[in-house]
Image (cartoon, rainbow, N blue to C red; front, side, top):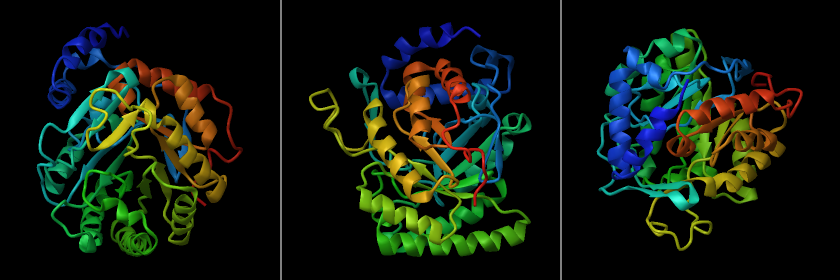
Length: 358
């Protein structure tokens, strides 16, 4: 397919407020995804099947959570050639998120800063949208559902929100991601600490086992962590994941560091930085996780993938699967096929890269 439509649209979109451009794009995809207009961005999916955490992924490239928070555009986004789509973060109750403006472009660094704050329409709306998405799954695509806590829920009661979210999305998910690493919900990253993480994962494991019995299938649960962790913190998380039988880990979310964008317009805005500047920090966390978790534990690498070479580097660091988000904003659908092809062409980093969860 020709990518001229995105090439024409990008100057217009980049001339708008970033959140306005984001909303317009999703609105257009939501309307067009069930019409012939989808051919403007649809492209053949790279065939590179791999089984991770008991799931058969059509290829190794996915869309990270955050782009489609309410799960409105699964079929339309999937038509770009992704092997899997992750939507959310959804919270039990609808919430508006943080005050605007709350999203900023840093084009010189191929980066974004956002402080959205889990703005979403709530669990019921989210599930209804996910249930309406059929074409992507019918073609073998994998759908991950990403859950978080409401801003108004005290951190001491965060586990309650995650249990509500897990129960709500479980019947509709191919896998569930537990997001405890956004910097835009007060105190959320404290859940990555020793005792808090232990309590959260113990509760989630127990509830997952109950839900598996109720629904007759076990849905893998992944934990999404931050890039702003030292080696000791990463090691602790790895140990805790294995102790509680969590199925996989997603590394990483956005960063609060600004060393790679100092002096650029908007660099001092509060929020999470994504795109090219987080690439190396993300890869360091992925590599550390792989060393601590061994060759068979599923890792999804995300952060700063702007090209096919970046996708391969993420896999070389130890990721079984790779996700993109900010790169899609800067590159458009061309990135999907380029990165998926690069991952398919990459030699296996480990003999067990295609293995399921131990």
